[in-house]
Length: 152
Image 1 (cartoon, rainbow, N blue to C red):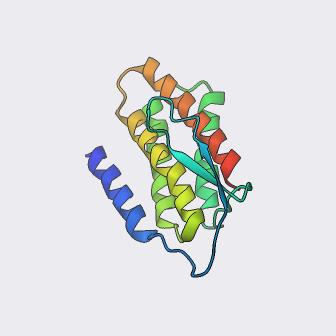
Image 2: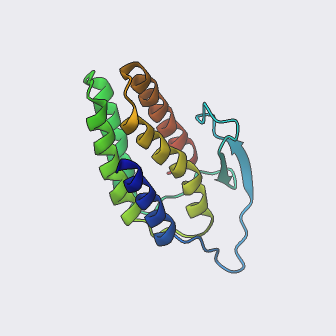
Image 3: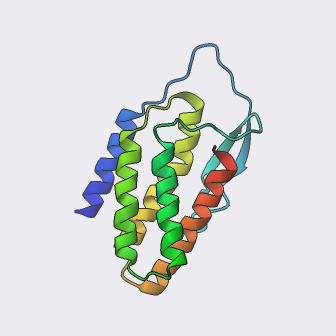
């Protein structure tokens, strides 16, 4: 059931955020490998906007920041209910997806970060080993560090 919900969220994201490029606009980018895709040989490639961080639309920022705060609070409180953490992050992800109105290169760059993040949250929700869940939580923290390197 959770896998079906994840697929639905990803489909909704793709449908609601169809990539479009403004005519005549060119963007010089610098390609950078996402150092947080720790287990995948096909590392996700993020691009900077002419060496600067991409701007995220105002409607989406609160859900990203809320997710990061939920994650940091979980770690700071030495919580152990990682299933509840995953559910809270998933709730924020659903709101994030519903709020997506970005287009063009910034939209595509965010998707390069977002898709692996959604997969990490799903993996945490499906984890049955608490030791492996701790590793996944550390990876989520690293994923947010990457977010701040490439987005504002």
